[in-house]
Image 1 (tube, helix red, strand yellow):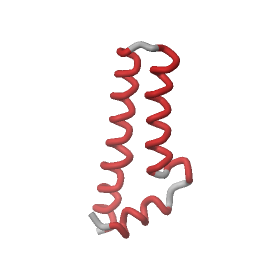
Image 2: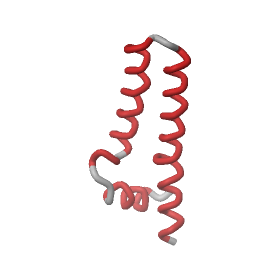
Image 3: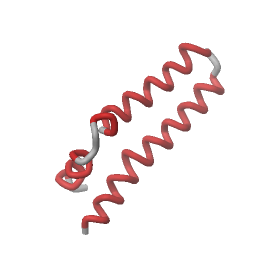
Length: 70
């Protein structure tokens, strides 16, 4: 994985679409769902949705961007 192409992708994105903000938002959603509702099925569903979101934006998008650049 080339660091320069990943940096290029993230340098084109606004602050709210950076890896740190995506991870932080996902953690807030999962922890917040537990703190507010104390329901494992709700928190589990939120965690599954967040994991899918992370997979898409933190793994698939950089790979697609790198492949597009070739």
